[in-house]
Image (cartoon, rainbow, N blue to C red):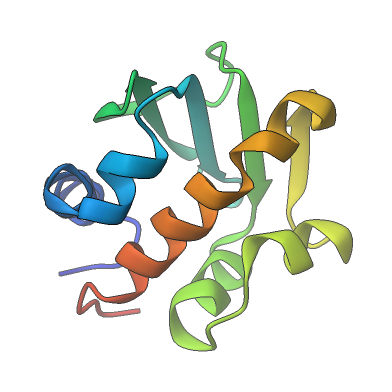
Length: 124
């Protein structure tokens, strides 16, 4: 399966819905997270409603509570090199748009998304 493809995100959501740590940690979370590959003009929107998550391909200009934007090469580092999203944002390699104050309480949820995503076998 190709990293960051529609199939990859569909698998991510299926795994999150079965993950006990996700279910427990995201039960009170309602947010829209967009991940955009800037050099391919591709985006995926994770829509979390009280812990239930869905995903769909979207346009990078669609509204979302939190947007993470970067080139494919940088996104691939999360999967291949086990870099974490926070570090890449702090280094300026992935741009973040949204309220940092509202994002901070969701750090546990984002870390869980990363952990589940890393367990998906993918081609880069």
